[in-house]
Image 1 (cartoon, rainbow, N blue to C red):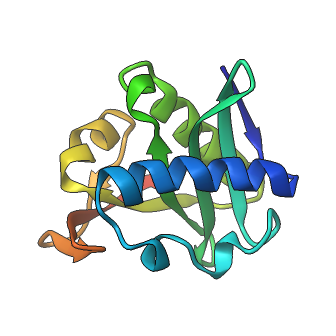
Image 2 (spheres, rainbow, N blue to C red):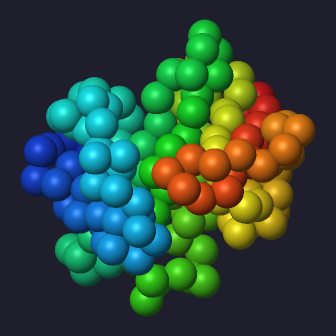
Length: 146
């Protein structure tokens, strides 16, 4: 498995294909809710891609939420590759990337079903109540990067 920062448009398109498969086809999120201005180019935010023998198997991105705080988003792993620590690999890569750029904290909006996964990675739930995003219940979680 290789996890890398996306620098080419073709890599971004591979990551978007993973997200469309996971969020749109599998979970029923509307395509117009899944893709936004941060997906316009590899430099619109910090996109990451995990490949296995050249095949895209996971994708994610992070952007600035507020000064010193990175927001991890759109973390998607194709179904056949779940349970193989690929989600952990891409989250840790994004955390390291954000920390190297001086960010002190990471936040993310986790689907409630994934809350235990993020807790294992050191995230703490900070939202008082679950909330809907794209029709799916989420909680906001936070982790110190330093």
